[in-house]
Length: 78
View 1 (tube, rainbow, N blue to C red):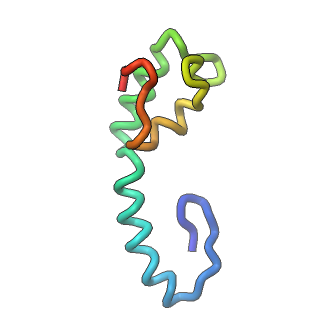
View 2 (view 1 turned 90 degrees about the horizontal axis):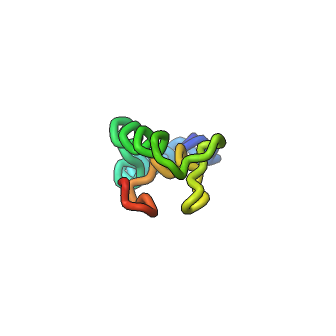
């Protein structure tokens, strides 16, 4: 079983039980593609973005941080 590129070595029965749990959890943790794109568009036009796609205000990798719905922009853009 593979969840978010993490291989889990579990039996078929356990995999059957875990898949809906992880799927439900992912919908509450990750933003939709549309929200990620909106956030990245704002980041890429921001004065604090570096050539490495890092935010120089909070030192976060913006591509990764745009995925999580519990993260916020340090200067309030999203």
